[in-house]
Image 1 (cartoon, helix red, strand yellow):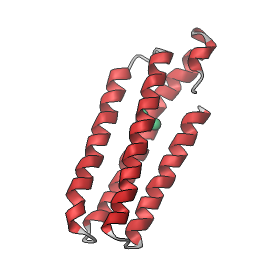
Image 2: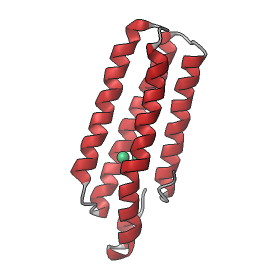
Image 3: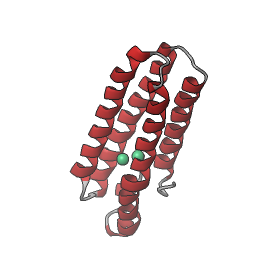
Length: 136
Ligand SMILES: [Fe+2]
Ligand SMILES: [Fe+2]
């Protein structure tokens, strides 16, 4: 699942660890407050990570900045909707499905969409000044 850009890979691994933590809190039947706290951490981390990617796209002159940014914003909306939808139900089945769905949405995004900019990055790295490709 590596995009071959160390800073981004680190972020993605952190992301997956947070999602696993959320799913563990759901399967351990922690209180809804604890589960929501973990979901909020994921939402904040996703927002920060998406901003970081979009900043890099401008530096790299990646052609599909707006398409990718729109997908980021849709993901954040879906996470907010899930949070609102499942909070009232406590431990009824909703959370288990939500946890699985959140993992799927974020992993699919990395595998399908982030891999597109990874290809661009690796194919065009030599054609713009090197410092524009430093992911810091
Ligand atoms: Fe990403
Ligand atoms: Fe992305």
